[in-house]
Image 1 (cartoon, one colour):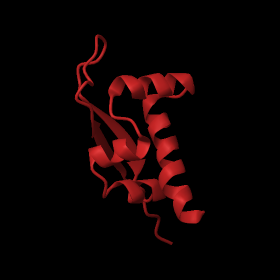
Image 2 (cartoon, one colour):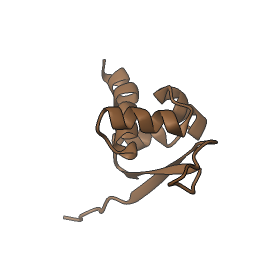
Image 3 (cartoon, one colour):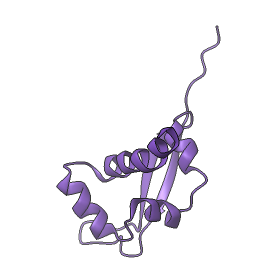
Amino acid sequence: MKIIKARRVYINIYFKNGITEKRTKRDLTIAFYDSEPLYKACKKLSSDQIKSVLNINSYKLLAKKAIKENRSLSNYIKHRLKEKLLKKKSG
């Protein structure tokens, strides 16, 4: 039996206002495995389309919502994308 290793792949989400006092980058990198259904749903979307799905167009709003749910930024994004993109298909 041949074991296939999942590869880590990344999607960047760009924010015009991503630079803050503690942050020097304008983009946020989200990690996935290439076999993950969420990655397959997201890989064809642009940064703007992902922000539209999340209904978030500023880094500050993203940070505020993630803090409110006690999640990291990446976890918040992946959680919301799963809700919006994957549950839509199954429901």
